[in-house]
Image (cartoon, rainbow, N blue to C red; front, top):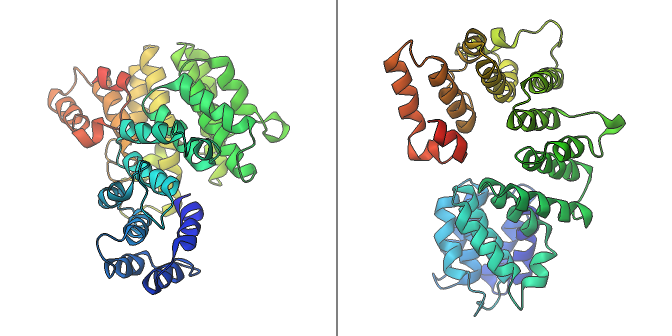
Length: 347
């Protein structure tokens, strides 16, 4: 999103010969972001255009923490530097905070520009700003506000294609799953061919059922989500044992296709284990979680952290030192930041 929307805005700001060289580098078919950053370094430190463009180049390299101070230095709605796009800078600055998990700071920056007398109307008409605003609300667990923001984007048709619309609906069902199960189910089906639920939709609906403590429905929806996940990865749903696939992942020579399947299926397995535990089937919960625990470096941080929390609950009386080890991992600041408030309370 940053590259599509904001490189183009940078082109129009190029005024000097140095700026034109930077803009030309950004226009390449496959931009070399490290080279772009080096070109920006040749400009004076007070050059807002170069600082802004270097910030974007760093973001494209996954270096949001390094980009943040550069963009903060040129982000001034009251007195914008000449030759820069204040809205583009504000979005990129907020995006840095979002990528580093500073969701409150991201939300504050976005809401300030959306309420601004001069730039507010443009911000409220910018799909990237609105989408990031909704995601910040969601990550701050402001689920009704996030759902309302996403509904507004969809109602206004502020998406480029069906893929982007589908992503918005997935995010919407995730938000509704936390507080309105009926709307979660409705949004997970909205716009799908033949009224069929997608993998993400089924998973979000299952999360909503868990919130309602309807574990029978949750079990059904999670089985559906797992089947859809296996199908998307080319596995035969009827004959594939996800636990056996997860066990293969502990091996260094595990095929990439298997690793990819397990990575995507792991959140379903964690939720299935939660349902099993909640309904008294501790052996079933342990069976689902056991092959995930050795995969710390092969699963997303949030997924592995949730697996550790559930594993500690299941094994609480069996192995004190292992339970302590899992909880200690989850309590690391960079890991705990990925948990919801409820998950932190479980810890």
